[in-house]
Length: 304
Image (tube, rainbow, N blue to C red; front, side):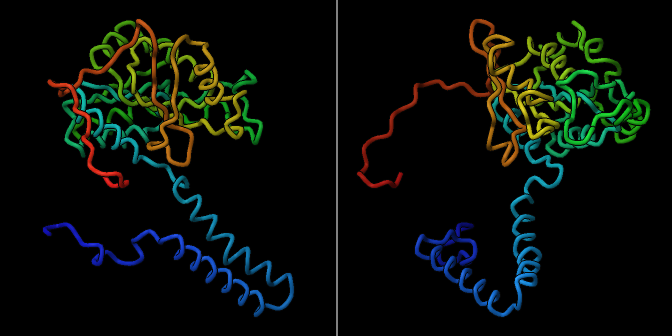
């Protein structure tokens, strides 16, 4: 059997329960709750115990996946593209601040041994957020955006990267419309982006980024919107507004498709698709030499 385990060797708690087992478990849990309720005097104590012992842990587990800053999808994307397509590639971060995410994006290329295949770019003024004067930039639930918030240091980030021996990074200091020059876009044509980390918070800044990089985007490129869920991801404000406009034709025959494998329980990770004569694609590492063959008839069971 080698490394493969038989079904009997798999612990019972790993296996998915059968429907009859699931119902049995549910009955057991319900019976346990009824017994607990019967042991507690008064509605107030019952409610306190329920909220503290049952509701709070259940909510914690349900939200646990997205309760902390998650970089799992970064490694998934890097593995996917370097395995299936010809490098070199780029990873772009818009809105770097003090470099928290940038350092993790850069280290991911080192961990996977692809520093020679992927260049990580940072774009930021390092002066913090501009003043949010437009309605589509407003945070109606608490005034999150403030002028000067998330200020960073170009010199400190440059020193951090150099001290750790990184060579596959570029830091572009200035406004997005000024640093995304024709020369920068020409470089991105040669090293197409595979992951774009949009952490510039405001709708106006995010829209500027998309408009500038649109000509270099290839089908399948992954875009991550860090601040999409402001105002409950209302399509009238913030990055959710930009996604709505993209998918309703403002930028032509292009689309952002939610990638649920990468995004999990959030709505932050999308795949870019373009239709028409201006489609750009990545160069496959391996090309099929013969047409695929249809599977033959085996039997009528649902087994493969």
